Length: 479
Image 1 (cartoon, rainbow, N blue to C red):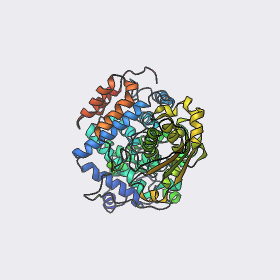
Image 2 (image 1 turned 90 degrees about the horizontal axis):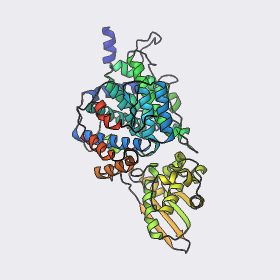
Image 3 (image 1 turned 60 degrees about the horizontal axis):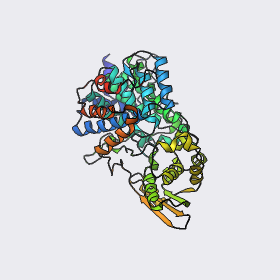
């Protein structure tokens, strides 16, 4: 077997599957495997630990807030049906299931209200990796320190693939980044060998290319379900590789591999300079639970509502950047959304609702509000257009300028360039705590403060099973 070791040292991935008659190099795959091996050896800094705490608390708060949403209930029901026993927690219940179904159900909750962090510009939500990482870490009896090392790895792979491949332009949904980020983080948690890790990545890539139609036009539960399924797929890929199942040797660069679909791309260097912002910190956090590109329009609309002093509106014009216009203000469905999934990705609907009511919240997405004639009428008055100068400044800024004319002819305007949670305007822990309490009190009641304190108190040696115990409250004996 010495020759296999020599080939590995030369950078070739050695697949022992007899169906693979050649040992062929896939540089993209090799780069990922090498990075994972390097990360296993690196310690977690205090700054990295703290940022992981912040991101996980944010994701858990968003997940608990969605506990009673229909999609969350359906996902838990499916998890219990598929695996009625296991070691992995279904967050918010006393139920346990297997790792892949826990990843699916918990991810559905964390993603559904669209409130956790994001890489704007088509990157999607690295926070979607947490559910799969938590499930595998709990299954493997790992501690918080190992979970956070895996999360740092997952965010790094997620971000690198996003900026290097830009798969949205090729029709591939950002849930694919979730699959790749999660499977690499889980490889660390499982302690896989380099060859097993390569197979796990291959088994994550080849069967699981997601279509971007999930986020086009009238949206559905699959807006959240795509990430939930991506989490499950990543966990199953890890389990297959650990069990000895092998994947294609060249999932990225081989004939009929990913490159044949997307075109070639080269991963950026994983080495960051001393002044570069860490990849996890580059993920933008959200003040409001809706699409990221409506964060600054909400803040501008809140200012204008105060200026209006109850006067009716004649016209509304929103100036934004090209990506925002394309993502949340170009489809006709955005002016008459029929469900929350479409409404929370509709800049016209959200701007009109904040101007109408003077605040942002779940009330904007209720069934009653979606049929409200006044809200619909005001939404039709919203005109959204790209400002080329704004497009040049995104994503270093997230500029929005709203101009409106009142029924009496008054000209009002407001402009906001940075939302709270942008890397250039970070969300302080105090604001994160407030967000968590506001989101979880309707679900946890008086326990919300206690749960939050326990999440912050977790140290690196705390087992994941212990960490999750405060989140296994008897909220319901049913899914």
